[in-house]
Image (cartoon, rainbow, N blue to C red; front, side):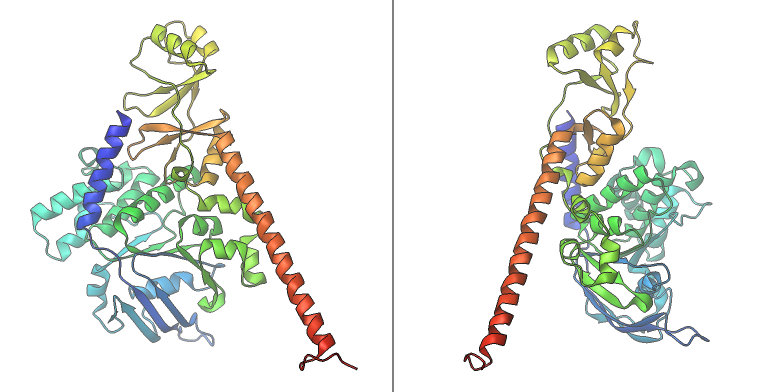
Length: 427
């Protein structure tokens, strides 16, 4: 049942992706911002080209100018020098209001208007650009479904009636509502709890895989940058680019000590953020539902050959882990039996997320869920540890190869010094 549902939703997602506007290139040429009374620029001559459909993350210390650089792209902050091109079009001198209607923008704490319903918040930009009401209604439902919220349940609510994670999802839906090619995100998940943040990151990865927008994302969290970015721009003060490369390249070959400081210790474990749950084996596990009779649950556990079984709620979402002793003590009711499932992961979660969830739940495995939280399968500790060992072995082999290259270079240098530039031995 869960697989059929998931396949149907994937088909819907493919249809959405097929009809949506994809990303546009962004080119920054000597982009500069000087504030009156300051001797140094806040942003100093940034040159950068971001490919269409790419998710680029700006990461750097507080006050380095990363948010200022982001806000100059949609001219919430006006540059004092340089050019901005989007899709090859110079937008530096365009009407800034019209420009912003063409660029999605999501910020920390969602930025939703509290006096507007969820539907009204999402409809805001489509209404401004003159979409007909029927198209707006359909788009609101489409966007809510896309970010994993039931339109019938959520479109009439106000922001105060939503959790922090739900507000952020609506914020992303609003930013995407007018189908912009470019989405700017300024620390959008910084104000939510860690588990919700992980799930929002997974949701963004899934959305980007479906929609192929050009996304520029600002964060101070290097682990978040590794998890999300196709490329990462590590920025020094005044937004000087220390390194602009793929997460793999930055982890394995940081440009200098400044970048190494961001990578920090445990680069091999950080590389767990580069592998997704969908890339490893997701196995099935015995499940029952809250609608099943206690005797049926006990019989299935006994015949499963496992020590525990996963109880699903009425929507087939992981609810509790049940052991034999739990059932013996249930006395006809599951209300107090078993251990609540504290965390789950989606197929877009990283192996690091999965490892943390396994350690949190203390069951040796973590349940994998679909867009509506429905059960898909599990990933166990053995699978995760095998992946860790593979990454460590890759790091060991890369280190050996690098050491051999250094030794060869030293040998060639010694030979050159002994033989001289003409190939003859020195006297």
